[in-house]
Length: 83
Figure 1 (spheres, one colour):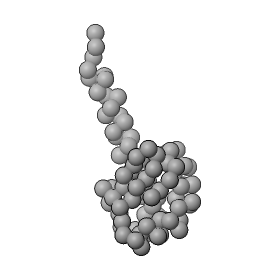
Figure 2 (tube, rainbow, N blue to C red):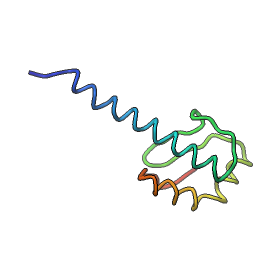
Figure 3 (cartoon, one colour):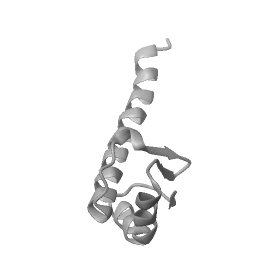
Figure 4 (cartoon, one colour):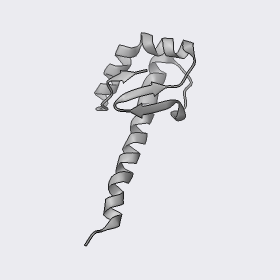
């Protein structure tokens, strides 16, 4: 018989892991750029991180992009780009 509870647990695990990854990415971006970002400023789609911030913040992220991506990959989070 089909158990709906186990089926829904699959999706809840994915949602929690996405939120955990966003928190880790946020900490890494804060360490390298010293930007004061919130979790709502990050969006993760198709292994690309979109950051909502002003032009100065985007420039700081761009200058430290390779270091940030390397640190994210060390955390075993699959991200291919930051925009």
